[in-house]
Image 1 (cartoon, rainbow over the protein chains, first blue to last red):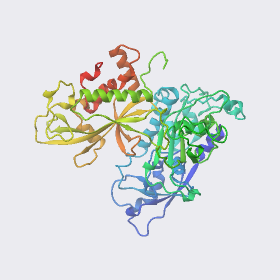
Image 2: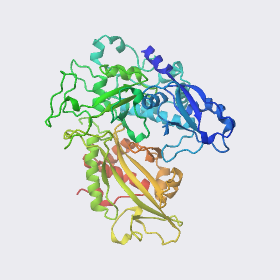
Image 3: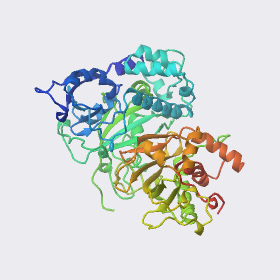
Image 4: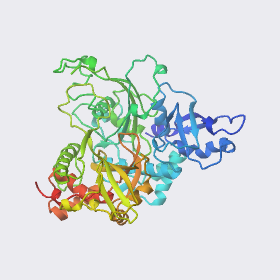
Length: 339
Length: 230
């Protein structure tokens, strides 16, 4: 468990950050800033590292910082690693971003007043996850201001040891899964969730905090390189719905099952899962397996876990510090049938 | 649900049913206002034809509600398109937002959009809203708070349950204002225990009761008739 947590916390994206040309007042223009950004962090937190590169060249005025990738203003409250996994079908290293210090697109992005806004957003997500897992926000609400600050700082600094210490006060729970424990993953059951201290509490509600980012790809493309860029957030479906795990005797609730449960509109409940036999049962309308949406890509923390992986393992090991599992998925839905 | 004590929350399907009941009662009892419409919130395009087993997910929408604030700090609201301010005499209404203004010349109309959206995480409804001027310019959070009727501002300040934040609309990818849901289940539970004296409400009435608390915060009261059994 500790290994997986270290893997997640040490994950980083190399960024090459260019100042937008409209804000360059010097000749020659400043070179881009090269920054290693923690996956579990947030872009506005990098400002102290980035600003020195550009401060001498900015036009006069007040800073209202925002980032953009290929024309798409980036939502600052989405963890950096998730943005990368979602927007770069073919991972770009370094990831070329543009920074703006002026002209905040406030009709598109909620305001960000520096670290405080990001912290507020993080704590709110933590409360939301707490509510989903425990049915109330007491764990987070009962943390003292200084404990919350310590927890937050450990995220800002991507300091896992500090985070483990601070979060021992949060009973984040583990997801128990009988099936997984009987298999070769049985060693996971005895390991603790976030925090080395004895905080292992079974989730009371049996629900998992998940945030799903779905890109419905209408065209076929062979390589990820050929994937069309995402030019608007309207192309992404954001699903912020707790995952309810349905336990069936002798069966494992897999990552694939989780996606299907979270997207009932796409994976209609009347269909049998594809795993059973090679062809799903024809529906009343006479449609066949060809009509099932195809998961072209699924990324969590920069990796593409096998769809058969037990969801309990995925959620316990790959979640973010605020206890949400962020999943990026590219789905190809077959073309519309006539009614 | 077979829990011993109701926790003040409702399920997604209960929300959908309650929303329908709310919209119907509103239409019946609040004719001066436009009706609430149900907007389907299917985030991902659907191409399958067999939807029968699915709960229809969506949210309630009330848009272009005109709130007029004069310099005298009195507020009236009018329906979009009406030339004059709404005349209170026509209806026995407790709606604080339909006070007639003093006829002051310095009136500035603002338009509000309201969406009531279900939060799957907290299992309660959440009110989202935004405001703009007649020229289409969006109002910032501070401006909105100053535009709200005097008694809503009071409710906002005094209540520990209600505070407004600026957050992204769950479906529209734009910044909206949101009335924070954290305490909703607590006060809904209290409301039903104290007022209705029941441990569990008829879930269809959830939204009506919820709105009777939340509405006044943003200047929309509801007529007493809505709270009564049909």
